[in-house]
Image 1 (cartoon, rainbow, N blue to C red):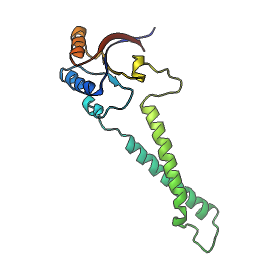
Image 2 (image 1 turned 120 degrees about the horizontal axis):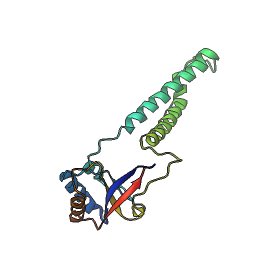
Image 3 (image 1 turned 90 degrees about the horizontal axis):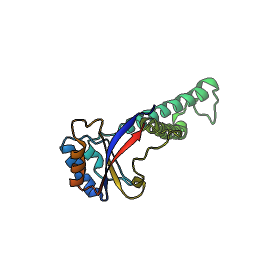
Image 4 (image 1 turned 120 degrees about the vertical axis):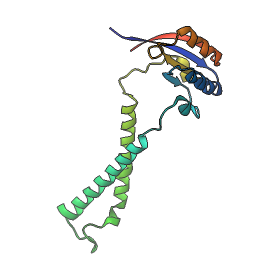
Amino acid sequence: MSDSKKFVLGIFDDEDVLLKAVGRIRGAGVKIHEVYSPFPVHGLDEELGYKRSRLPIAAFMFGALGTTLALVMQIWMLGVDWPMIIGGKNHVALPDFVPVTFELTVLLAAFGMVGTFLVSSDLKPWKDPKLLDIRITDDKHVMAIDLGTNRAVEVASINALLKDSGAVEVNNKDVDE
């Protein structure tokens, strides 16, 4: 048995109207589930009240891991496991380790950020995308309001609030989970 969520969708033509509508609707005490847009809208994340991403912290941690692994690997291989005197240099010559250390740092930071983003965004190759309205991939902005989290507000008042805020179309939709 599949659970069904009920949404009210406000469809907007213009991103400036959308930004003003987000502030107005949040100011009225309605919780917005998500705003879908075919392109990035500057200032939308601040209007929705999103916190700053922690992805840069993950990138730094994966980069530090790459640096550590590269240095440990080279020091172990060239200084402990198989020490060789090449050109009269020391076994552990750190300036010679810079290129490999840099490359492994960048590699692990990049792979780590991609993996962290996919896990945190719940993006899986086998998961079907749930589009609330197909026009969000083309030219419309869609504001989705989950009725399950807005039980104190009536559906008719949410519809009226969306229309008054500049939505060109307001739809009610059931989405299977």
